[in-house]
Image 1 (cartoon, protein in one colour):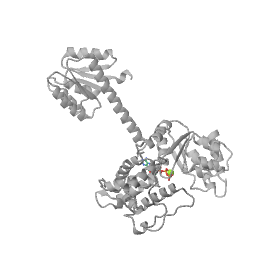
Image 2 (spheres, rainbow, N blue to C red):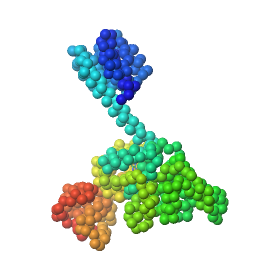
Image 3 (cartoon, protein in one colour):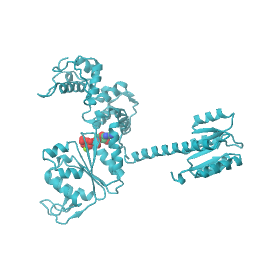
Image 4 (cartoon, protein in one colour):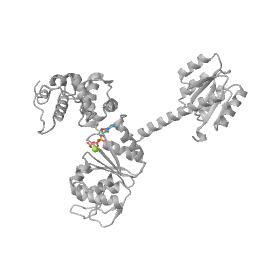
Length: 471
Ligand SMILES: Nc1ncnc2c1ncn2[C@@H]1O[C@H](COP(=O)(O)OP(=O)(O)OP(=O)(O)O)[C@@H](O)[C@H]1O
Ligand SMILES: [Mg+2]
C-alpha cells in the first residue's frame, strides 16, 4: 500500500494524548492529520479524504464522536470510524457501532491494539473500494441497459477471461448455444478494451457470399455492375475498434481465406482493388457450431480457427447455470417494467419455480422474451406462470405424440421424454410426474441428473420408456 493511501484523521480534545497517537502512527508511515475539536474534524473530513478517523467518543464543546459518526454517515463519506472510549461509556460505543462505527477501543489505549484496529479498518475500506470499482467497471461496460448478469460458478470463468482479455488485442472466439449471450460478451469486451474505434458487428450467416465479401472488405468503383461508387467495408469501419464476426461457422471457404490473410498480414484489398489497405482491428468471433467438428468435416479452416481462437470463451447453456435465473429474471422484469411503464412487484413462487426448472432451449434470450411477454400481459401485482408462457397447458399440448429417433439409448429416451413432457406442461413438475406416472420427487431427481450430466445412479426403476402420449 502506498503511503498516500494511508491517510487518517485523529480527533481528541486532550492535546497530549493526540500528539502521542500522532507519533505512533507516523512511525508506522501513516499520513496523520489531527483535530482537537469535533467541528474542526468535520471541516477536515469535508476537505480531504481519509481512510479512517480515530476519534474520542466523548468530547466537550458541541460536536462529539457520536455526532461526527452521524455526520460522516449522513454525508456519505467513505471513511471508517474507530472510537476511543473511557471505561463507563462502552455502552455508548456499542450504540455507535449500530449506527455504523467500524470498531471501538477502550482507554487506556495500547499501541499494538490501536495499530491493529486501524489496519483492519483500512483493509475494510480497501475491500469496499475494490468492490465498488469492480461494480463500476461492470456497470461501465454495460451502459444503456446492457448488463451481464450472473454469479453462477459456470459463468465465473467466462467473466474472468473477459476481464483479463479485454484490454489486449488478442482475437477471441466465443462459443455457446443460441441465446447464451455471445454478442453481449463481445460488446462488453469491446467496451472494456478501451479501444477508441467503434464496435462493428456483422452476421456471416445472414448474407450470401458475394455480399458478405463486399460488406467485409468494401469495393472499388466499377468493381462489378452496380458498383457506382467506392464503398468502405466493415474492416475499414472498424479501424481502431472491434470487428465482431458473428456466426463465423457459416463463413464460406473463399471468405475464410481472405479473413485469414487480414489476420496474418493485417491488410487486404477492396473487391476490384489492388491497393493493399492496412487496418488496426481487433477481431472477436462467435458461433454456436462446434468448430472442431466443422474442421473435421473440412468446412472450416484449421489455420483460421487457430488465429481466431487465441482466447476462447465458452458460454454455458442456461440450464447449467439455473442459479442465475432469479437474478436474470429480476433484471429483465425491471428492464421491461421501465420500458412499458408498468409496476410489477415480482414473480409468484410458482412462476419463479417454473422459470428455474424450465428447459430453456433458447437460453437467456428465451427467458428474456418470456418475461417481456409477461410484463405486458400480467394483470396483477405478481407474475404468474400463465403470464410467462402460452399455457396453462392447452388440452392439445398434452395429447399427440413424442417422437424419438431409432437407435438411441434407453437413458436418452427417458431424458427426451421427461424434457418434452416438462416442456408441454410449461415446466410443471407435478403435472409431469402425474403424466409419467412417477413421484414428483423422481422428476426433481432426474432433472438434477439431466443438468449435472453423468452423475449416474445405477437405479432405473421408473417406467416411461415408450409411451408419452397417453395420460
Ligand atoms: N448474462 C446475461 N445478462 C443479461 N442479459 C443477457 C445475458 N446473457 C444474454 N443476455 C441477453 O439475452 C439476449 C441474447 O443474448 P445474445 O444476443 O448475446 O446471445 P447470442 O449468444 O449472441 O445468441 P445467438 O447465437 O442466437 O445470436 C440479449 O438480449 C442479451 O442482452
Ligand atoms: Mg448472437
